[in-house]
Image (cartoon, rainbow, N blue to C red; front, side):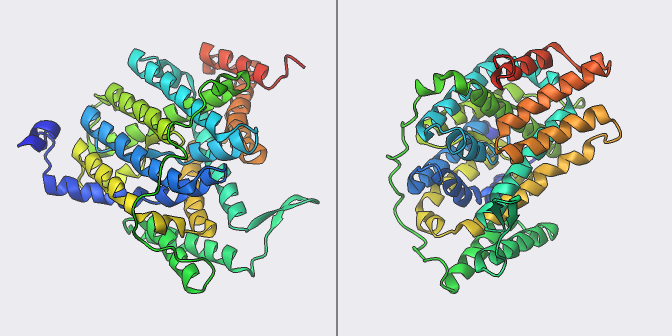
Length: 432
């Protein structure tokens, strides 16, 4: 049987039926990206229909690569947090075009591919302290929360206090709050596809009360031409984009590593020491997926932690990921529904992802002020400066300086010092 040869189902104590069910489960858990990604990237001026197609294709290609190359039940799609960084930091805050931002995604993927091939990734990951990684994840979560609350109209700008509370008598903010509660309750009750159900429920309520138009459910896929091969690689070589490329790379490397470690451990695929046998193959698949994604017209493609839902349903091989890929291709025909989803329907999904990402702060030793301070600075700088890159920079610098001046030299290594100095130069403190 071809599937047995490809995926070694018997050796992993699984069946085709189990893998298909696991694939469907994973897809339902992560399908919210089909609605959220066009909404976020569309804010840059990118064609939402083209972004929807690029999202489907990037997810399908990435998941197939992971399934066939690494034989892992891990699905890929454009990453949350990375798409927000792409839109709100690189394009809207720093002023680069989305074409140049795609070029930066491409270059970060090339570097990631090289790091995976030459196994430099292990050195980089080993050099970054675990608390700082947790702070970065939490900071991205808080950044997403701010974007969600702002998009829903719950948080608004206020000239006197910088931010303020929006008008909660309007239907948009109320529907967003309802959507968030629905998602959390469904997740607490372990309902598969809780985030997707929340988005669709608020969308249909919005249509039902005449707040947003109904564009239909099925149609032929929109044209991908507006974003396909539109990346500006030459523009991405701008000196000011070095930190941007690094931020894409940095977040992708740690996002992937955390997901791979967590999901493979749950699937029983890691060895006794917690090492992943085919980590190199998985990272090659991941970086190749990011390359394809940038060519198609979407932000960085990465491994999804929602793959754990499929693993819980029995997924153990790459067949699970291939099933997810097939479902993303079928989703191409649902573009009218994706176009009908209002911002306040996707905001609850962002807010829920923020909750999951902020949970890592529970692992921080808050009694150690030399650890707590850099982590807090990292997490708060991201939303308050509207930049993931700034958060990473301030986190590295404060960690290194505080640890060195406190005499905690063992908690600082060469990579941290070098990266901190580069961030200081980037922020202009040495050139001022």
